[in-house]
Image 1 (cartoon, rainbow, N blue to C red):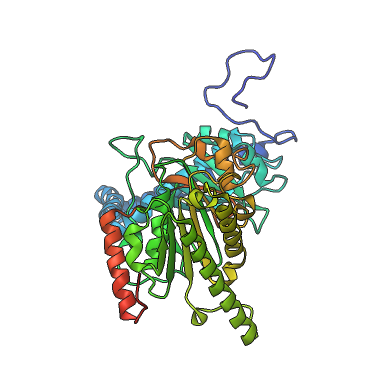
Image 2 (image 1 turned 180 degrees about the vertical axis):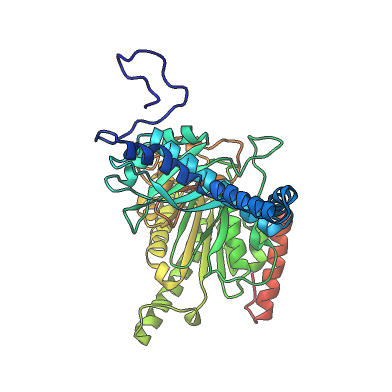
Length: 467
């Protein structure tokens, strides 16, 4: 019965391929009926039910008006289903889900993922996303999610898709989440190698709150990724022109649209943060003394907030105790690895203190650099950062310096990203593993508009004099 001819067998293999049966007991008429008739028919139950309904309608029409009714009744139902949008969508979705489940069942069986009781990984939930399908599957008894992960490449070949990704459910070992990647949501129809920019959802509209999840990117399945800044720090790295500044501008845009948020900036090139200056409380450029003074002032604010908590007998700051302070540093290497080693050492000590103690004081650091290696960013500073965002990198080692040691060996390397796809990177945030994504994009005109709205919002709530 197998689609592969056994050694020593005589004659040609069967025309129709069938997976090997794992059943160890001798097949009987009843078991063969279940294996080859009942279970395959169950996968076609929706189509069989639809055909059965049409047959019943044809029979009812024949009893009422004869052959004319037998023809008109089923065709009338089909016409209604096809012409009513709601019915048409539900029918198409039902048939698509049935087809997906049949193909999944067949792929699991040919990949030898069948248990001794002829059970496979069963789909319990499926969602259509722009990049393909996201499934939740139940692990059969005697198997693990790791078995499916090991066979992911085989399953992808059997499904004729780009990739199949599997991860175990963090709460239940008998569940696994499967991404069936069918297409590239970043692809440009005119030039597949160059992805088009994606407009930031918050580019228009009213005020925002940085305590809310901020949309920052679209993953390779076409779903929006968000970041919650409060209580976290973020490090962005990658080669020049990879899209670090574009990703950084999204966090600045969210802070600008929150009139209660303070923005402190340090920019070695003077151009990346220049457009944001009207909404910044303080900004320094390529001056080490000013950068050190700015960091010292932030530490004084941090200490004052902790003194407030001590006097109030509390451990957690709230929005009523003071604004969230966003500390944005572009081209971090200029400040941490300056030619003035004494100044850089001083700045590094201040930066480590800010990142280590600032989270609970509602001070968030957003650090961007080309290569955050040990000679550019002290490992004591880099290891304190919770969020990592690696854009296109030149080598796997550089990718690991951003995402963490061993990530490239685990299959997460920003060096594999196409050099033509600006803004595409690996975001290591919530979820436990880096996710391939493309950041949203703000043009200069959109940044100017966001800044103008941010200034207006700050004046509306009676903000301070902005520098």
